[in-house]
Image (cartoon, rainbow, N blue to C red; front, side):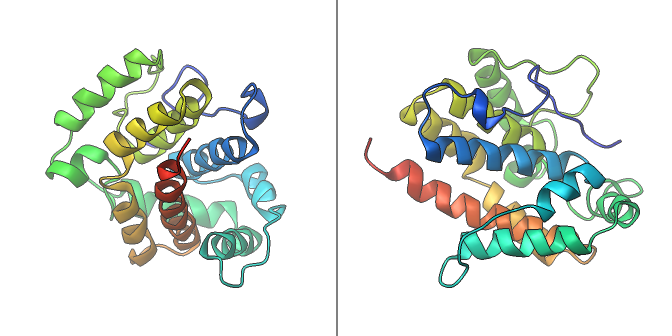
Length: 210
């Protein structure tokens, strides 16, 4: 089964909906939402069109900008029918995919463990509810990206850093490196590179003084 967005906000927080946010926060929320979309299901033609329209700054000396350029190129070369197979092989498979994209798995080696229980408590605190028609655990990488976009909307810098440190920082960068190195990854290598570079950016951004 392909995971769908878990939140009552349909899994994404449009950047323009964040009131009085800094421009950087709008871009950050949008990046998390895009990663959530790409990791929740294989991108369709509409999502690929968005990728083909990416406007990134000069890539020289800037790993994050370079990763956006590579994702744009990957979108230009991709076909939805091929991405269906790639996504299946990476994340679903027969029994399981090449990667197991859950926080509990990365942190404990098992599914449905303590990290998920803590996440559910924190989701409730922010009023983020799982959709009734989605059975995937909330600690799927796509759902956590979606949730971070919502947290950027609702929390100050301290709250954002606490969420990032608790639910993302301990494992997600490693997941994105694994995604880049996965045997079945082609298009998703570019997604993994963007994710890794963005996690590194987030560490630095959230550590800045308020």
